[in-house]
Length: 620
Image (cartoon, rainbow, N blue to C red; front, side, top):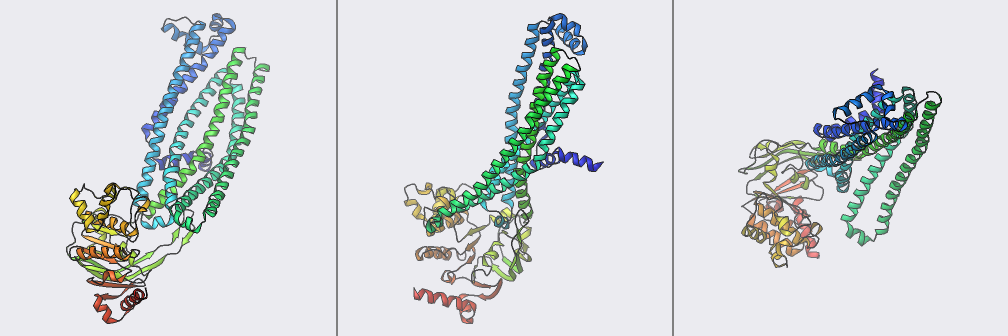
């Protein structure tokens, strides 16, 4: 029995709707409000329709025809009119019917308005739920999901949820109206009602045959849309490369091919929908003709009964069609919700870095690394397909970073330096070993307080398409004074900004494109210095800079030396010769450590790296 119940639930889309409501977080008050409007509209519709029978009977035989017809409904109507001291005249009956129609439309207006309010609330709640989870995801999550795809889901697919929920509520209204129409038909003739229900079931079975195809088609279309959004965003972000390689025709063709597939899916969906209509409309008209024939030939129904019967059948058939359209619409919208759910679950699964309770206030002794290892995991896409194999990056790294020291990490590209410094603010978590701040495990600290205590300058400056001021004060947590801003700009050698026509209000452009690499780097450095962090991490800040800009960064490092705890990755070794200690990283291990002079005396890995760079400089 349970098996058949589950089968019925799946056929009726109950399970899909249940999963939808569970993920989207629909409030009971919102559902009850919408259902209340639906109930009011249904009752008014029923009252107005049932008034048609006495109106038609009045038209057939006058007021005496009403009294002669007798029955529960007439007695009920007569009691109401007597209570308000009105005669059951044609004008009174028509006014009552018209009044019910007006009130029904008013209730429909408020239902549509409140439905839009609820739909937008649901969409916003789901969007923020997904955004919050995506923001909380670990960096590894972003290697599997391009930014364009994330934007496509957050801005596009989340809207499907609100529409789907609203469609479900509207479906409830449609079902209530259908039940009310069937009740009126039963009141008129149970035999004719059975005929009408038989054809309604046929229409539903025809619609059921295409639901699975619609679900698969909508999901494929949504995935293609997500893929296309990611591709366009990625290519737009690298427009300079596209221009330089002059590949605009190839890129346009790639977009065209995907768009053509999506267009084909849309056309096929329209064709399937049209084929359903071709079968459904004749079935519905056949149901009307057969019902009228049986009523006239076998049941001897009156003209008033037949007229009302015909009117209700037409409306019932319309609602049956609306019901099946709603089922198809919910099935299609569920594809967007499915993609949103996949993205949410993937982000939640990758959110493995949990915050501790201890607030990080100040580094007093230093940072200790003991046997630190890190492994990149296998990467799978949303369909469970392997994208790339994981690999071991760090292998038993042990080191000490004393407070106030200048520590430099050097080594060949791919040795694991950048991964290592990402462990300090817990952008990633160690796979083995431990990192401690003043002998307290880094995992015990509150993530926000830890990360806000570490200034991070990367090789590619992290800048928004906003003003210089908004960029340097981003996430600052307080409103700086003009003096504080100027001091930070001077310390970063970024005072060139003040010579611009708009000064600090100058727009940087997309990722700072309106400024040179050195100027962007100095603006990013000013942001870190303005926050006045105790710990500063520089991830190859001079690797792509000219000699003048590199000199500015070196001057800043010299000024900060002894005042801050500096951790610097340097490709250009001339940047870090003054470091207190150099940690030479090779194949995920620290193979040498010491000062510049100590390592040069050893004539090991570091000495070979330094000498090779000096030869390159001489050759230039």
